[in-house]
Structure formats: structure tokens, C-alpha cells
Length: 312
Image (cartoon, rainbow, N blue to C red; front, side, top):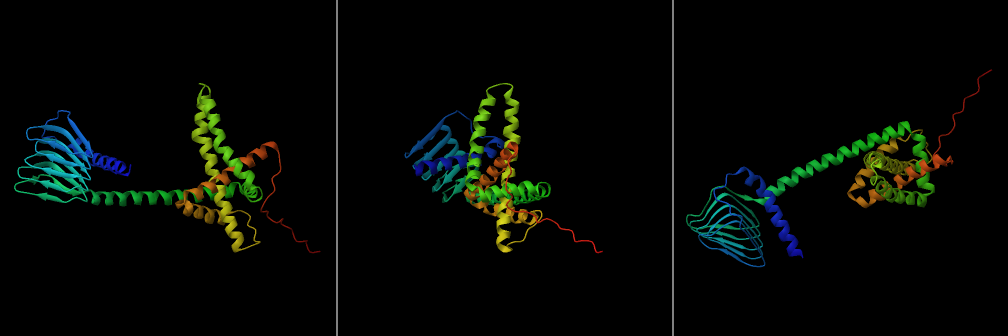
């Protein structure tokens, strides 16, 4: 199984690397539609024969004729008097014998290429590992920028929620603190129940627009709000341990600390998922209790402002 996965990944990698070249190049060899594939076996293409593609995994490819593309993974490639547009070798020693011509290029990964006599490669001999390292650096940088951008957007959204709905946020926090089991169960129900609701709406023409609105607007918005509530709750928890007893009118500082902490914990997806589930459940439970007219105990209250008596 491991060998099969490795071979499939190698072939897919070869296809991805060859696609741009194949589209841009003007093939010197004709195409017959002939494809030869061998796994745990050998392939020999004698002189005078032609194939579009030869793929060998864990075997030996002996090429003496004309082939457009040769891909060998965990095997051996020997070409003598052959013509090929592109050669891909992954963990495969390559021997280019006399009279061999590779037209477009040769791509290798952990492979030794030996040229004998007048064998030549008209294109470049490129190391796939170098290309993968460059692509990895680019994708890593893009992922880092995306991660930082999401974290900043989350903090900005949390500050806005703290400014406009501090009382509601504190009520949701109280539910997480005082009724964690109910909040967690509400989060689970809030994940499962919409699936059945959406399924029921999608079966009717009238319900499709409503289902699309719930799926792409309401559900993601409530889930993101739950993520924010979870982050603010974490920030309040940290502040209460650093400075116990201090009451802040609006949780601005908690928003920054909590959302930054939640973003950092994103490297462990299960932690972020559980925290978000509590926040999501708190939002749903608070909405349900508000709809029913129930009072929700406030976990953090702001002391009343007393006015000093006027001097007589």
C-alpha cells in the first residue's frame, strides 16, 4: 500500500510538472495514442517502435525506440538510440546511451543521470526537489500572510462586537462559564440540526433560496460570531488571572488577547474547534433564551456609578 501511494504521488507529480511544458511545446514526435504502463515489472520499447507514454513503477524501462514521455519511479531507466521529448525519473538511475536524444527536458528527483557517447539533452536537466522547495517557500509565505490576515480580521471583528454588544457578549460568556455542558451540547446540536433543515429546504423550489441564504450567510456568520465569543471569553479568563477583581466596562483588551491566543492555538485545530464549539453553542443558547424571554445571569457586571452628594 505504501509503495502504491508513493508511486501514485510520483506519477501525479510528474504530470503536474509536465503539463505546462506539454501545452507550450511543439512536439517533434508524432502521437499514436499508445500508452505502456508497468508496476513491479519491466517494459522494453524496441528500436522502430513508438509510444506516447511509458510509465514504469518499481521496474526497468529499456527504451530503444521513440516515446513522447517517459516516467520511471523507483526503478531503472536505460535509453539507447532512443528519442524522447520528456523524461521524468524519481529515485531512478538514468543511463542515456549513444544516439539518445531527449528533446524538451529531463526532470529528476534523487536520481543519477549518466550520459554516454553522443547522447544529449536539448532542454535542461532539472532537479524536481529544487522546484518543490521553491514552490513550498512560496506557498508557505502565502499561507503565513493568509493566517496573519485572518487573525487581524478576527481581532478587528471582535473589537467591533465588543463595542456594539458588550452586554450580549458578557451574557454569552456567562453561559460558557456557568453552564459549560449545556453550551457544548447546544454547539453540537447547532452543527447537526442545520444539515437536516437544509436538506428539507433543498427538496422544494421555494425553499432553495432560503436554504442558500442559511448555508452561505446565516450559518457562517453565526459560527464566526461564536469564534469571536470564544476568543473574548479566553481573553477575559487570562485577564481575570493576571488582574483578579478588576471589572472592565467593555472587553476591548480581552478581544485582542483572546483572539490572538485563539489564532495562535490554530496550529492545533482540535483546540480551536472545541473552543469555537463552546462559543457557537453560547450564541445559539443565548439567542434561544432571549427568544423565550428568559433572564441570563451575567458573569461579569459593571458596578453601578454612584453620584456624590452635592455640598450644601
